[in-house]
Length: 303
Image (cartoon, helix red, strand yellow):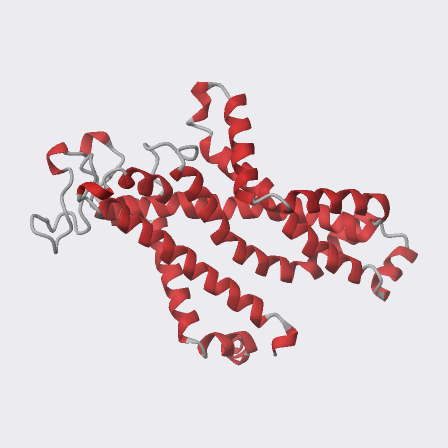
């Protein structure tokens, strides 16, 4: 049990337990992740199985509104799909796309940032100018452009089956410059240290130096940035789906659910879009609070 005592005595654990807001955000995030992963077993209804839908249950309001049913606590949409179940399934897609796109952005950004910071010279100038040029354009526009080009290049039969991969690729490509700049700064500091000079003297290959020494020592700030980047990736995915260029209506996503419900917002069926929108806000806010806390915790100037 010695490891448990060390964890409880750590500054990070102390900082975590001192803020009820962060503990609540962590609990909500963990709750959303668990309910999303186990959604097929936790939900009573399969909202995306056409054989299980009943059109006569369409537009059923929430249970506290006249006409509501306990079978559908948050009501149903225009096809009779349970809103609560669609939110739980929708969180799966949003979290999956957000996590994988950030992972791709980290892979590209850390690789290019390490090369730029360690090697320097013309390669550093080339990579940083590309990053600076991309940073002048909002990520949502870059993701929208790449997503459109990728869809136009794919055959119609493959578009729906590869839509998740296209979203991950487009969002990941749009976000890599931030990780490259942070990694480059750390690599430029590490390359001037004595242990790196000693590795060069004994003939260690530059690639081995970057993989064994540079990257492990610059990953701390990058991981914090990734935590902050996940909510942004989720918002971009939801925006693309809301615009109709993300996942199709047959695939659950918070952005798709909001777009579908928006068509019925002013006809009285407000719950179809309000509840998915609230779920998106809660998810993004919780993860963003954790990211901000990690950034402040690992910042020596704030200690």
